[in-house]
Image (cartoon, rainbow, N blue to C red; front, side, top):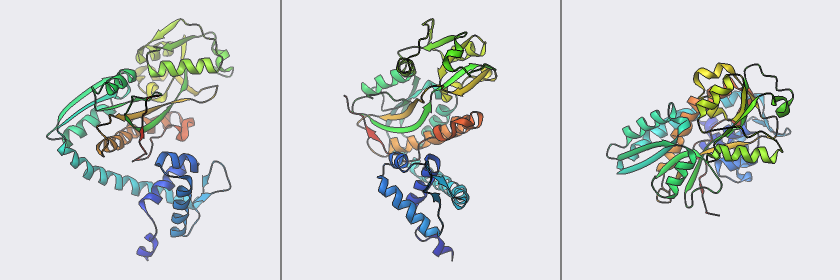
Length: 332
């Protein structure tokens, strides 16, 4: 009976079901997994047929799971986590053949993700000369473009470094950060009594936030401009300022976090994408393996705690699934 139950259940089908459960959209699932929309629908039909139950309520948009689907999702995620852990353990062994790797990682990750990732890589690459640097996204992008780094984990820009392969890791939504207890019923206009803290326009975040301000027609005094995340969070926590930031940045607030409230943007949503860039010489499986490990660490140290602290983020703050389709960056 057990063999009959598993007949027709495929790893790809489980991945499609898991991703669709979190996105509620066939189109978004297809994009994240590098499949066509018809292929996603077919995989879901095959899985439902194999299990003998409907997993998704197709009559609702976004799609939602049936009661059977919710029950099966919990089991499917446990199985996928075990398979991915086993696969990572095997695939990381292949990194022992590397002779040299130069990698950069965004400063947002230097206290949590980077140490774990560096330890994993150092253990796996026993014969490798390994160089690791941290820095701002725009600096790491420049080093990738100049081939000074092989791989960089940072915020994406458009266009990205010419010729680089891009592995998406997570979308980091922009959010509103205000002093604890601030009434935001009036939207941006209701914050006029507070000072707006701008980010350094050289930063990817700074440029994206300025474009958002312009697009939404906001008129904000240009008084404060900073490149230090800790200084920004300290001033917001102090009670006299507000800012536009992201969950990744806010979760680094440390001792200032208790005095800051986070909310969705009052205007249209916006996010930055954290990616792994690999130069054109690194088109093999190694960047994808490193990206998969980075996604796991981001989920553990940032995304899961972030969704717990800010439950309104829902699935907008969740890493891309393993082996998410990579894209080539072409200079425009």
